[in-house]
Length: 506
Image 1 (cartoon, rainbow, N blue to C red):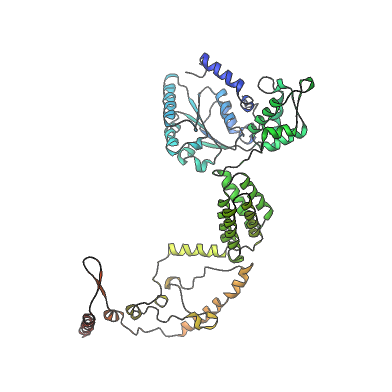
Image 2: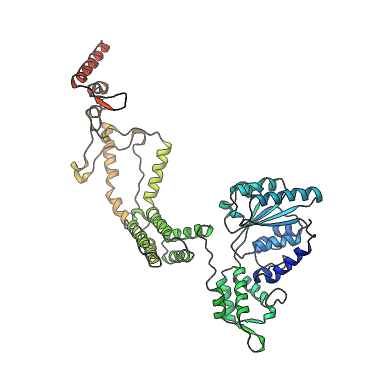
């Protein structure tokens, strides 16, 4: 059925829904001229506007916060295009619905040479297989896809599908733009609240706009609730006060999703405020996250990470402070535990900053992955058996406590990494003390290098294989258990091995 062909029942249903729909749905703009906001994508001369007006639309993804106009733009496309418009909601639709729509689009293309625009609201709720189901038909042009999402397409839309659609980013509406929509709804007799003769007090208007938080849907639906519930005064007028708006709203429209984009943006902002030593902004982002319903234990875990990554030994008490905050949150719950998080945030902000350990361990990881894994030097190995002692395990090891200040001049790296330096303490906070304590590294290393250059190369004083022949060995029974050979047998095997070595030398 073409776009113009609607049954009587379709028309009646749409008319009833339009009359009974919430104010935000009734006041939805029907053309680009009525649309408010998003000048960056549909302003004069912009690509998306030109494509809509010329009916040459391509597959697009509309990404923006709630109430910013994603569905409205899709509906405007439906009103202006000659293509068949097929709306779907990812909340209720499945693969079977997608296949039906695609089959009808193929038939429509073959029979009427008519294109099909498929609008998928909340497309991020489709899983990978559901998104893959539309991929071939977007690619071959069977359908033109309009996907709307409040989540970052980089994470929620398959890369293959994302690469075949252009992403347009919508922003929250400004207070001025919300005000335009509110004023328009108050006086519109056909679709708005004009018949109620509502009057919005100046302070009530400002309060409504502020609490809507850039969400047009929230502002309009709260306005409708306040006006309809208000009893008319003398003359039939309804004066809407701040109290009326507060009752209608109940709470601010919170822009936060603890599983979505704002979750990651807010914790990133908190982390950077801590790193930059700004306690005021850090407390603000902490409050935003907690007000949005973020898991306080998640915040506690991230604070522990901040203490390790950005403070480290600049202030060794930072890590215990964050661990204590985590324990307090776990023990007290909310809202008492929130204060422990606030205290930890302020402590981390004022603490001296150092990422020296963080950088040092990163360099270690690179060397571990990119260099030959040499054996542990013999003098650093433990020697619990006679064989291992005979092979030189532990030989030449200097016990630190036998030396002044418990500092020794011996090499601890394998040969291929000798001389490496990973940890370089800063001069901030406690690490200034650490740097002074480690200053001996450079002095001792230079002295050791001079002595090593002047010394003669060592000469092996033992034959490891001969020593190994003298060591008692374990054997295994067929069932895998260990059995000790008699001592006399072990001695005879050692003598035979020595005799064999002497014959070989002749």
